[in-house]
Length: 62
Image (cartoon, rainbow, N blue to C red; front, side, top):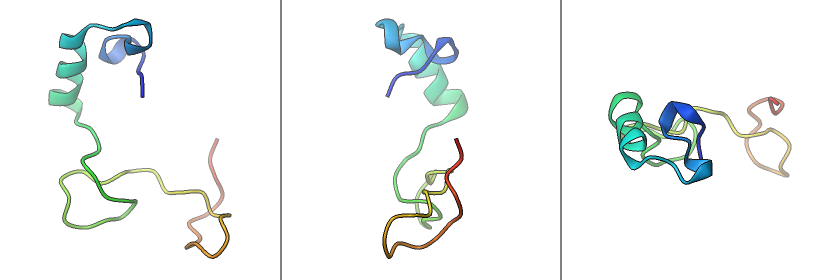
């Protein structure tokens, strides 16, 4: 994905040092689905709730 000025404007080519600073100071998702245990930083946003027989977490925000 790309990010805006807060981490180096990666959508426009970016500044690698700014992306690295964002990684260091803010962190990034390190794996696992929503509410997964045993990972350093799980994905923080619940999935949408209307995909067949999947667990319902609520409506998509958007």
